[in-house]
Length: 268
Image (cartoon, rainbow, N blue to C red):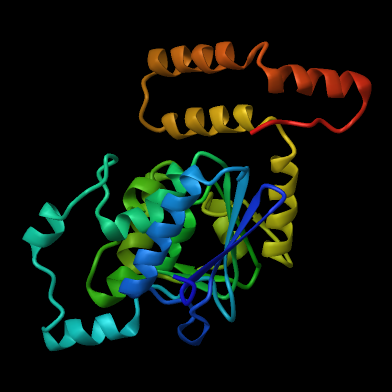
């Protein structure tokens, strides 16, 4: 896994880096496996309170490895519809490639994607799996699958539906056009434009790591439920999460630390 993805955990922040630098972190089978394995590990990693996902080298992720497209052109890389539909799926309904993106939503703590260079196709869908996306102004982003005669199939539709208007999603999917950081923020696909997305992401992750970790996790559960839960279910979930928090050790520590004007000391 270390030749595709590395993880460095310091002070509650997991610094996750795609490190296939010679291929602009393009997605091959080994990269898919590394992303899924890393995400699954971080779901239960003790002491992790926030995650930053970024790419080393010139790009965040250039998308599907060019070798896969060359195989498609020759006909030898054709994937049958039956295989895509009947592939083993997670409890959330994702196949292996989709889980490389969805797993970041399933991690119980906030995930921030720091994006530079390019994030095309699968790389674009990967960044959508994060809770927040910090990008450079000159980043190049695209739902690029139509260029290769395809549709986004790495959870792109499931992830975009809560971020952008329906017509914008359709335009990007139909055209595959490339757009930059400022437009991504305007559309809702990026959180903010940064001169150094990774530095800002790590700083925010450190700030989040200093909050009540149980409240942060409860917040992520509620935010994940917002897309699909009906109003009654969401209102009930709010009450259940708040009831569990009020009077808990970490919640009392948050109040006490604020009253005493000191930094809180939370337990995981």
